Length: 213
Ligand code: E4P
Image 1: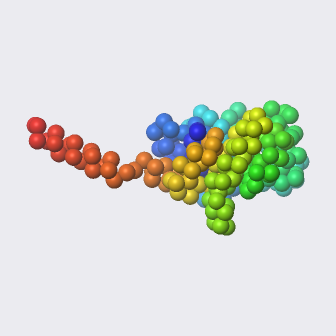
Image 2 (image 1 turned 135 degrees about the vertical axis):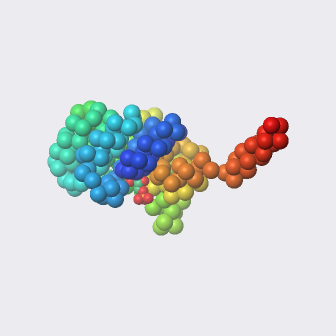
Image 3 (image 1 turned 135 degrees about the horizontal axis):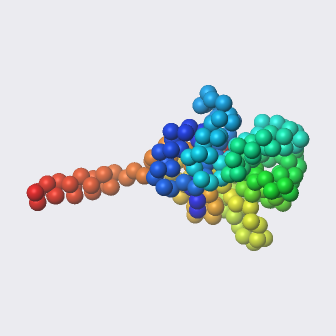
């Protein structure tokens, strides 16, 4: 499973990229709005930090508008992936883009059938939202497993991005359920790194080493 970072904050992206563990970035309008900066400028800066797929989301609700926005966004960098909402208009836009060599990430996926439709339209990635499903009393990881099984059975190449990750357990569950990618917020990366026994172990090694000196 590949790891992407789910943020539009360039300092967070730089830090985790320096760890050498991320292969891509996902953003969404809420994450971009939090930064209070120009959308294209932020996306451009991100492409200069991470050499991998960078998802940038369209705002239009009609296929035509989505395609227009995508045509502008892909000019920023060849690594740009167009994030499209899981709607009828979104599917039409995905079909058009996949036929024209533009990579897409269909977002706001909450069922296996939605993922299947997105894949059929030619989506490069689908993003099932694990955390938001948990929020309404479902088991988000079960959806990842279902989509993964369906894609395996039918040889579908669309990659599954486990999104809306809220805690470290979601990362592990996504990996076990067969996600190709987990897109993870900065603070969860920090939590994944930490274990009290590691800190204690280092403390003990250093104390013993002091004794030798
Ligand atoms: C990423 O592609 C999604 O936009 C993001 O993971 C949503 O996360 P949230 O449900 O915590 O807002």
